[in-house]
Structures are given as C-alpha cells and as structure tokens.
Amino acid sequence: MYKKLAKIKYLPNNFEVIEDGDHVLCAVSGKPINLEKLQYWNVDLQEPYYSYIEASKKRENS
Image (cartoon, rainbow, N blue to C red; front, side, top):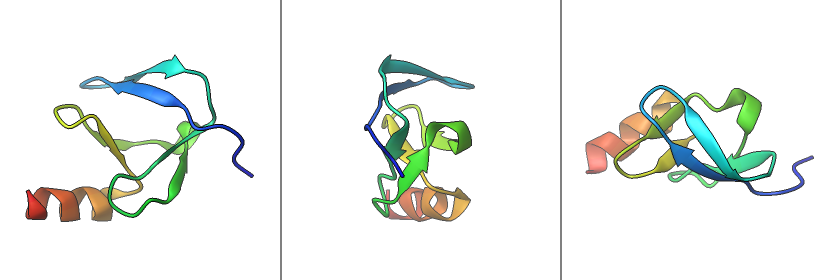
C-alpha cells in the first residue's frame, strides 16, 4: 500500500515535501499517514500525527 517514506518540513498552515514519498509515520502511534490525508502536525516538534487523538495525547504528555 505505502511505497516510500517522505521527508517533510512542517509549516504553520502547510507542509513542504523535502524528499519525495507517499507517506509519513505518526510520531505517537507509528501508523502510516498518506500525505493526501495528513492534517495534524506540530511545527515546533516537526512531528506528524495520525489524528486529533494522537495529537492530544502528545500534548498531554509534553
């Protein structure tokens, strides 16, 4: 399903693909996230999250 891990620079309202790929891995769960469905990330930590649930867990544990 997923072919290549992308390298991403996370910006406040968008992200920039640094190295081509089709997915990234959630920083909390390790689940693959298709770049077309990537909606949650932390600019300061430069981390992607699978959903608002993982983003909330990360925020709670910080």
